[in-house]
View 1 (cartoon, each protein chain N blue to C red):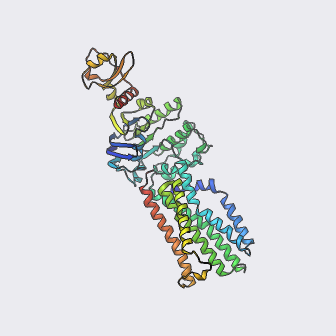
View 2: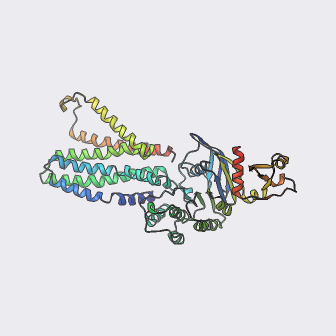
View 3: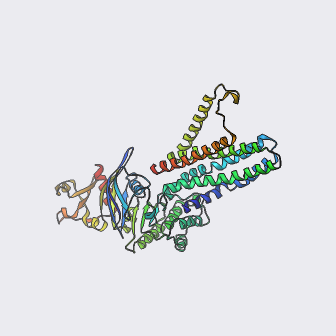
Length: 214
Length: 281
């Protein structure tokens, strides 16, 4: 497992070394444009999406060089290989999300953001950062990087189409009959569901990858 | 204990079946897997490493049944796959560090010695190395953790004759310790002839023959004769033949031909080619 982590860290350093710079720039732009909702939201979202796709990119790099196969000749299991990618994804996500949330907190203390806005944006980033890999990683482990990516995109399109169908004709939020829930419960649900999907995705990926012929 | 033992190992793909493979590699020996492209050599190696699941049959590697968790056994196995498969952007030193983290018995000094002896560039990324240098790096990594078994898929492919000879010598040295074994597949049959104790011939997913090399060379020979002379030989004496407009060259069992027939020694390559041709006929 340690060997697989080391290989991933080398790959991250080689392939994503400028990501750190991008994150700093994104934080800077967010700090100085918090009054402007578009910029203050877009850059953190972009950074979170980029980092949450890091595991997906690593799997694609592994597949291209056949490291995924070579790694299975080392003393490690397929579970190790899958778990490593999920942990890398979690760590890279945390390394992006935590500084953004800290920045939001500072901006809130300085009065340039409301507490409510800070909470909504932080949870939104958390949901995005966990859902993207939860839906993308398992298909990659099951079908490989080329087919897995197509299936991931197909699933996203189906989900979007399903949501579109469910909300057809709805023009305002008032038209959606959501059960009345308290804010803390909503936040808890918004965090718990993506976390559960992320963990479920890991379990599914292990199961699928253990069955796959390399 | 046998280093490798397979019983009825079967894997079915569309258009190809590795069919009921029975192989035994005793500890301390070198076995060469010979076969044309698509004969099932790489499939066999992938099955033994647990990279692919068999559809039927069983196998053990260093006493461990093949399957999803061969962690302990893999500590004692050195592997070189036909495309090696190290991460493209990494250099030899970084690959050494990864291997050091993977294997308990990793010997960094030995790895560096192989890098020097085999003249492997350490300042280039793996993707920038020639096929020969990639293979050499794979061999250096496979041999630096005191493995008890080497599983090598076409390890001499892409190497020039001088380096090939050097690598074959390294493999020979490796098995001086009687506890160490090698399973090696190669198209370059002359390398296997120099190196192996056992030869297994695979053809279209079937094991044509698996025998001690010296016994094969003792048992079989080549004769050159006319068709009429060939027809007079006992049934079962001829295992393969190659006909030209002028004569017939036949692979025969030495003990099944009359004493007055001149039988010359056969090479493993000739043996394989004639066996395959016979099978195709």
